[in-house]
Image (cartoon, rainbow, N blue to C red):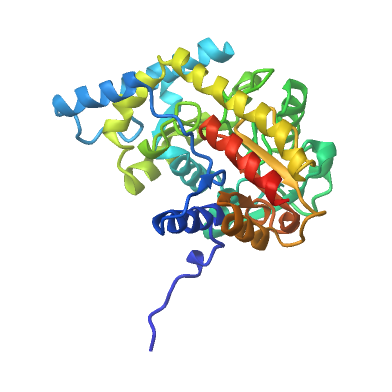
Length: 381
């Protein structure tokens, strides 16, 4: 008789990772691949980050830390909010996490019970709904359109039947790159405050913007749970380091969960992250490179038939509507990889109901790869 397998593991896969595996298999077979599927900076961590990690290794400071993280990092993050947003944050409200993924897990566990309902825009980051589902929390998808800038709105929330216990917002967003301006985010903060809905603000793409700066939910008060990461702007994906700014009522619950689930975030990465916060000049240079890639693809992709693109205000993605090309984005992406070597993410990862007619390109890689991908796609279509 087979052993029981828990139902919580039967969540959908993170399809982008499956696409990356197929692309890597193609590369291992000796064929070239242009990686526009994965949301990973093609830039390295800044030199000062590597130097800080080397010093920490040499000084043998790689033991456990407090569950909330090393005090110098939490203090430096508090200073970051003062300098970047004009907001005073008590370092005691900051918890360093194992990537933003660890933050989402801890935040969802602390804020929601089994059976609670949490709203989020579709298209949106698939791990939100899959983590919620694994925890027994119901994700409530808000079918957001171009007229909503693919973001949640009070009007979309008003259309939800039944109670809501939480709302997740991401600005800039993955996969569309759209942003909420101050008025739009403020309206959502007020909506949630008036109805006792827990607001979770994913701010991991802050710093990667192509015009107006991103607005933090912390600029409207201290009730939101804010999650950020060193992966994107700081170009440190594999270091698995993030942080949370928590409202007072979640401080002890999150700390207790963190102690038991993770003990602490990776110590070496914490010392490296402390250095990363002082590398703005180098990091803004990386953003300038993403901006060049963005302009290149905005000019070239329409010539290849990808002419229905979401407005990419930030992050490093272009979300394309491809109804005129296919009604099966997964099969389309497989064929595109096989016939051109260009890897992209099918929209079903981000919108299970309508993503069969969309796909996402990441422009976080080298400019030469973006130009070559555009050339191949124009020749293909």
